[in-house]
Each structure stands twice: as structure tokens, then as C-alpha cells.
Amino acid sequence: MTASRTRKKPDAALARHLAQALPVATRAAIEAGEFIHSRFGRFRKLTSKPDTSLVTEVDKGSEKIVVGRLRKAFPNDNILGEEGGLSQGQRVSDFRWHVDPLDGTTNFVHGFPFFCVSIGLEYERDDLVLGVIYQPITKDLYLARRGKGATRNGKRMQVSKTARLRDGLLSTGFSMRHDKFFSDEIASFAAITLASHAVRRTGSAALDLVHVATGQFDAFWERGLSSWDVAAGLTLVAEAGGDYSRMDGKAFQIGDDSVLASNGRLHKELLSIAAR
Image 1 (cartoon, helix red, strand yellow):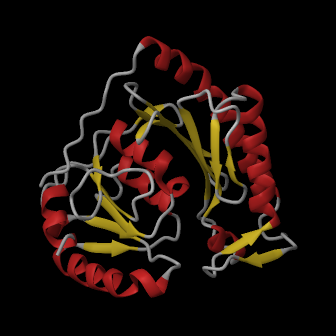
Image 2: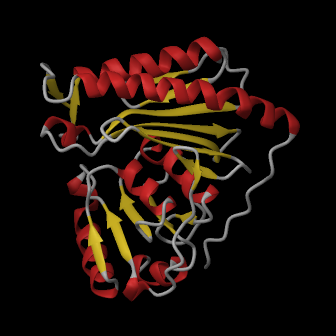
């Protein structure tokens, strides 16, 4: 099965909402990113979730900034945030925001400067229509809006043209839920590493997807991710000309526990390995 996706063109009402949403989400991401940057290397409080992933006061502070801006501008929209759960508004909107206030918390905690703020927007069900990712250390801003392409600091992005997996540079991550995914992750990692030129693991799914959209990575795959990890990044990949699906080749839906994103040219070959 191929992973080709049919992406609907936005109607007038959706286009208007996106035109309003993009600047709001952009300001929120930058403000939260600057807050994160100001505390890089000097956070004070650290806790752990049941799955052993880390949470800092910076995650919570960043989410407060983003959710506050989104709630003020769009009080009826649903918001799903990594640290704060679901805020449902008045349930009269077809829009749902997916917010990762600090993607790459472990990197942040250890002083490794590879993390970001990720804000994605879903329309109706499973239709990803907007993505904003801000990398505080480099101050790079990545934007995507349905039908308008994807940009990095205002310049158009395009996925790579790599056509053979053996020539490809890929990225992946390992879920914190080792008991559920680890054996499959190791098997996929071994098979894809042997079939490709090289594989990297950075610790930020959102930025890995960004680098598929920029053409620096040719593909990314991972299991056990949440919607806020991928909503913005998948929008960027699609608007930059790439493709995405579940690792078994079926269409990706919000809540699925595996994702494969690529430049499109490598997708079928990758699925033949990943779906084994």
C-alpha cells in the first residue's frame, strides 16, 4: 500500500481561520521560546512522569504562555497540551490545537541545545492544517499553512529529492514506553540502518520532522509518539512536498502510535522494511 494522501483545499471559512491563527500561533511560539531560552541551564524544579519522561517548570511555564495566547484569541477552540491535558472550550469549534511547549525536554535538561516549541492545528478530525515550530537557540521559525507551503524564516522549504534509500540520511527516536515498543524499535532501527546511508537520533521528534521538510533528513520514523509531538511537524512535511503515514502504510490519524514521514520518493521502499 502506498502512503499517498489527499489533502483538501481549504474552503473560504477555513482559509479565514488559518489567516487569523497563524500570526497568533507564531507570536505564542516565539514568546514561549524566548522564555525557554532565558532559562536554559538554570531551571530549578524537575519531576518525572509515569513513563519516566521529564517535566520541568519551564515546560509548564511555556505551555501557560502558549495556551494563554490561543485561548484569548480562540476561546472556543479545543486545546490539547502535553503538560496541561485537554481544554475543551465551549465545544462549538471544529478546531483543535496540539501544543508541545518544550519538545526535547531531556535535551534541555542536559544542556544539549536541540529543542523547540511546537504548535499544530487540526481541523474537524485528523486534518492537519497549520504548523508552527520555533527553535529558541537558533531562533529559526518554521511555518506551514494548508495550501500555502512551508517556510523557514520566510524562505520556502522543500523536501529532498533523494530517490534511493541507500543514499538517504534518516532520523528516528525511541519511545519512553520501552515495555511496549522497544523490541520493534530495535528491529526497525537495525533493518533501516542497514538499508540506508545513515540514521541519526536527536531527541526531538518535532525538529526531526522539520529537517525532513527542509530536505536535510530524507525520512523520519518513530513509535509511541503523541499528537503534540507530530501535529506541527507533519504539516510542515506535507506542505514542503513530503508524505506521511503509519508504519504499516495505513493513513495516519491523530492518536496512532507510529508515524513514518519522508520526502515521498522513499516512502514505498521504507514501508516495505518498516511494516515487516
